[in-house]
Image (cartoon, rainbow, N blue to C red; front, top):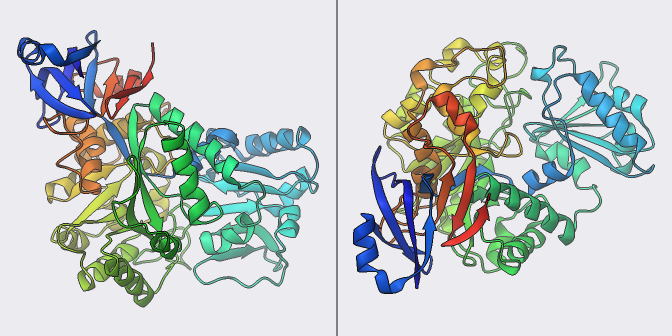
Length: 533
């Protein structure tokens, strides 16, 4: 016995403006679509539930193609610095947190971004020591490619002044040679993060629960998430996903990117690409090739405009990168590679050309921000998907123009150009780096403007997407990123019954009115997981 969905604007996403009057679903699958009278007559004996959409708008379920689900939950549970627009407000908040926290307990906060401060001078070890030396303090930058700590955190982590800088990581110092508390990239950050207390099964499950509940409210039916390396290793995190999603019936389609350092554990556990449980599947091998633009660690082909002594950080040599790609191929897995700078992007294309994926599989290039035209032409000939985060445009501009040359920026953040070249693009948030709300990413893709700001500049007017193309990033694009474009991302007979219902007709309103849109129902596998009313 199945469900009849009717009396709303039901967009199939097969093509722009394509709608149906009604949808009949059964056992998690779309059985049929069409006119209401036809569906009622044909399936009269099988309709056990009727969902009156009451004039609201139903789309295929929105999926975030790149996020860190546990990390998003952590951000919801921790002190959030992302909306604080000065170093003074952050230090005041950290001081208040220390005042109400027992001595010796760690203070971990998320989301500082010096590019949004009037005074962009960083908060470093000495400033944090002035707040407290009784609490180990860790402040994570918004990009999660840098963090800063106080002296007590260094002591608790066993880090001394004689520490040597690890390959692929950066440990920063004051002019006099003392550690200034700033660590960049995982190889350096993990010297601190690996010593954080409280990362146990319960902690991970609490963070996941918070994150998935938030995703429901935002209309997300799934996410491609990368968490398996950071929380006591592969198995504890994987077991937490199973416990929350399968054990607690918190239905959510989670595709787990497998960090290259968790790869062997995944194989040893019997895991394989696109295998797992009903709602949890292993996805591509995740590889980092560079860092972030804000931290001057994204790998560019020329020096940074505001820091001429560096062009970023290569996490791996080209030889090492190719060896990792070859390892993925031996397990019949595609790769998902973090590549922000154009030189990092170049290295990834070289590796894919040397070791292409198994026929029928696609690799994904995550972020694809700074890209030269000739690299785009090469990418268009390869089985790759660009996993983009439209929200990076309002976040990165205008400060990115001070860091990256105008010549490199000409063909960068160029979502419309990518699509015109025939490159499939999927849309994500990179939460907790950016807000999880997909409507904010869609608004950014359509307007390329900041919100809640006096800055009305359109950053890259010719690269604005239509509202339809922007929603397609989070529906058809996300489905293609995991090879399920023939089963998800559209409202078609035989596809999975995943839907997002909005309070307004999102494909028929002015772009700025998108910010007034709310998800009112989230449906996964024919189950209503969130109903605002």
